[in-house]
Length: 403
Image (cartoon, rainbow, N blue to C red):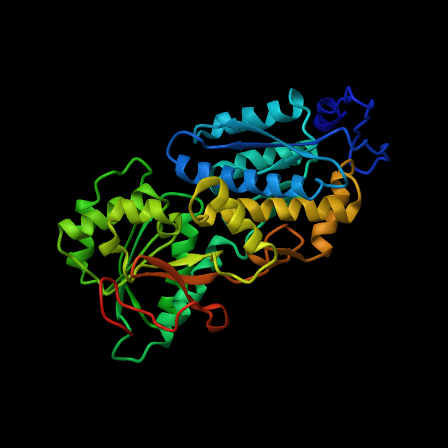
C-alpha cells in the first residue's frame, strides 16, 4: 500500500472518497471546499520570501473564491511554518497529507526547501507546484509530480544578462568578472550559468567562490574581489546576503560599473530599504515578473494586492499567485482533484496563461521559457530586456552613467 493511500481519508461532509491517482472518485459537492496545503518559511533566513509567497497564495485564493472557486468549490488554504528548516518542511508536508487531509499541494519557498518537500509529495503521488524551485537538482531525479511555475531553471535565468554583456561594444564590455555566490541550490547554478556563457565568449574570471549561508560580513570577500581587478560582479544571492554585499561594496568604496545580483533586487521595497535607494540605481537582476506586464489576470492581481496590502506586489508574491493559476488550470482541465497523475499529465500536455506570461513544461516538470532582465532605475524596478517586454529603453551602469 502506498503512502498516498495511507494519507487519504473520507471527508466528513458528503462522504467524499479520495483514492489513489488514476482511480475513479465521486464528485464532491459545492459545499465541500478544496483544501490546499503549503509549508512556507514564515520565520528564519528565508522568511521575507516566504511571507511574500504566502501573500501571493492568499490573493490568488481570494480572487479564485470571488469567481466561484475551482469546479464550483471554494478554496481553503492550510499553512504551516517550516522556519527555513529542511527537516521541518518534510514534517510539515507529511502532516498536511496525514493530519490535514489536503486535496492539493503548493510548494514552499526556495530550492533548498522545495527539494526535500517535493520528495514527500512524490512518494505520496501528489502533484507539487512550486513557485520557487529553480535548482536543476529539482528535475534530475526522475520525479513525475513536481512542476516549477516560473519561466526557466536557475542555470538559464541569467541568460539575457550574459547575452547583453557579450553584445556590448568591445570598449564597453568588461574583460574580467567576479562570481561570489551563496552556497545554495538556486544561487550557485544561477551564477555558474552566467559564468559559463561569459567564459565561452572570452571574458575572464577574476574571482569565483561560494560563501556559507551564515555569512553576514562581506568585507573580506569584497576586498578580495577589488584586489582581483574584476570589472563586473555577478553575485548569486538570496535576500540578506545581497543587501549586506552592497553595504560592503560601499564600505570598501568599490563600485564596479556592472553589478548583477540573482535574487535580492527582486524583493522590491524591502531591497530598497536594505541598501538605500541611491545604491539601487543600475543594479541588474533576472526577473519573472513586472507589475505593468500585460499578462493573464495581472491587472486584477495587482489591484487586489494593493487593496489588501497597500503596495505593489513583489516578485515572490506574483510567483505564488502564478502557482495558484497553474494549479487551478490543471484541476479545471482534468475536471477533478482525485486523479493526481492526470493533473500532472495535463500540465505536461498544455500551456497555462499566468501573470508571469505563458508557461509550459518539459517531461520532467522543468519549464520551457526565458526570464526577463530587470534593472533598478531611479528607485523603480524596470524591465530592460527583451525589447518586446521592456518598460524602458535605457540600461545604466551601477550608480550612474548609461550604456
